[in-house]
Amino acid sequence: MRIAYLDRTVHETDGEPKPNGDVSAISKSIDLQGSVETGDKTTIASKDFGGLYSIKPLALIKPAGSDDISRAIKAASRIPRMTVAARGNGHSINGQAMTNRGLVIDMRSTEENHFRLLNINGSFFIDVSGGALWENVLTRCVSRFGLAPRSWTDYLSLTVGGTLSNAGVSGQAFRYGPQISNVAELEIVTGKGDITVCSETRNPELFFGSLGGLGQFGIITRARVKLQPAPDMVRWIRVVYTEFDEFTRDAEFLVSRDDGESFDYVEGFVFCNNDDPVNGWPAVPLDPVHGFNPGIIPQTGASVLYCLEVAFHYQKGDHPSTVDKAVAGLLKRLRFVEGLKSQVDLSYVEFLLRVKRAEEQAKANGIWDAPHPWLNLFISKSNIVDFDQTVFKKMVKDGIGGPMLIYPLMRSKWDNRTSVALPDSEIFYLVALLPFVSRGPSVEESVAQNREIVEWCIKEGLDFKLYLPHYQSKEGWKRHFGDQWTRFVERKASFDPMAILAPGQNIFKRTHLS
Image (cartoon, rainbow, N blue to C red; front, side, top):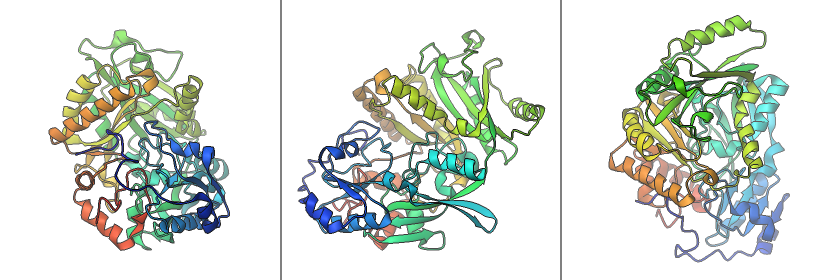
């Protein structure tokens, strides 16, 4: 079995003739209201955040709207072996937003096409463009309406259509589910070029297929996202554990509590029991004035430690003592190392944009554009202890030059009608190893380590799934989707959307499925 992001994807040597499309002829046939970029102007579309591949498209389409996207897809369908890929903010890791000598559609050019607040039976929704950045959706919704989407990703410089094509996961997902569980309606341009509106009751197969469908059912051009009142402030807290079982017990306790009986955000990460500036003690404190005191760590502390990260929402009008009491009541139930707690209070928007600050620092330090051979997994609760013993305590015990996230999610908060493949257990963990190559292992070393971890998971029979998966073979995809495979293929047969859509590794590429 080959895992595409662990092995260089074959884009130019797969035995297929290259598309014979002529850019000028395509431009004339499309008759766009937007524009067609060629030559050096397509450079941005030949790479992504992962930095592992460079794949040159034939042209970069900057559509004015859904009609332009429809025209581009229909024009490409008339050219043998021509493929189309949608590109949001280019934050994919393994070439999903690229296509070799095909057409890349720049979804960012459509960002302003939709932004409308709706009140439907007393509930608020926002209609936004698939090419809109979540960070802009956040700031506009909060500043204009005092409302915000319920579920987020940690990094918000991602497009709406991009995260909804995967799942959209962060520390709020234990309560509200991923972003795909908070969508009421989509507008999709299918692989046939049809512009289709879909929802739970209208074209439901296309709706649920597209949510978490990895771009294989069409391009999301508009989404109707559920909103709720936005809090003013957040108390952001980190506490430290030496024992993995205590860390997981407390994390699972918090995510299993009813609404109003827990924190509003729960995540966690692994860090090294040393002074490494990236993966060691300096990675923990939130308040730069108060550093990490390693002298408090019990002698039982191993080579790696664990940080539980939580947040409590409140309003500016809430009395400080009320917030203090609520937070203290939750923290007293936890078994972290006494004295190893860090906290700050900041606005809700500042909290959600916290990774934006890290991005700005990384860009200033020149490391943002380094390759990112990241690995993201969903792992069943039943296997997470074994994963800790082998991966965290042995394979990556010296750090990876970037964050090592781990936190529990609740399967019941995910709609099983969507295309996302999950482990079987009710509680499962997201594990994300996110190295920045310029300050950690080399690309080759990181890729080899990723391969070793995944192969170990397979060998040991772990109940796990790759998140943001990239398999190159039919067998790999069948194993990934498991019982969903038949339903997935049936959806494809019903809509035949995948004749030309090609997000990196096309699940339904004609050479894979007959």
